[in-house]
Image (cartoon, rainbow, N blue to C red; front, top):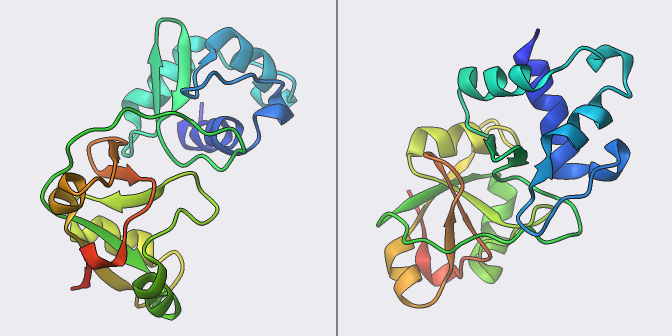
Length: 179
């Protein structure tokens, strides 16, 4: 079983197009594992996928994008579906980072960091991860430092995605600087 391909398929199903797999996500993005397996198995390529494959996929993943609990599975972050996935606010580290394309910097300093096509702004706990993310849009991205602790104290809500990704509804520009 190619767990990398399975992870991409499940990410697409849970983050971007649950209706294509006949899935009904709850308000926190959870879906019954049985329902996901039924949706996946509609495609001949995924006919043999079992719950143990999902567990193994999560265990071997470098990036923790999914979680399983009580017979349900969800994508932890990255949603673009119209239904807002509800997250629990948490206290962020003092600083978080965001890699972005050079042509977006002026807009960010005018409008703040916005979620764009996603439900939340994605932030990283380290500069290297932010740089890798930024390189998806620009070969030499601009790295931004977010005063997350200060922003949180002043009312910006942050949510922990996993051990390297944090989420926010919006980050005002006054908490952002260029590294």
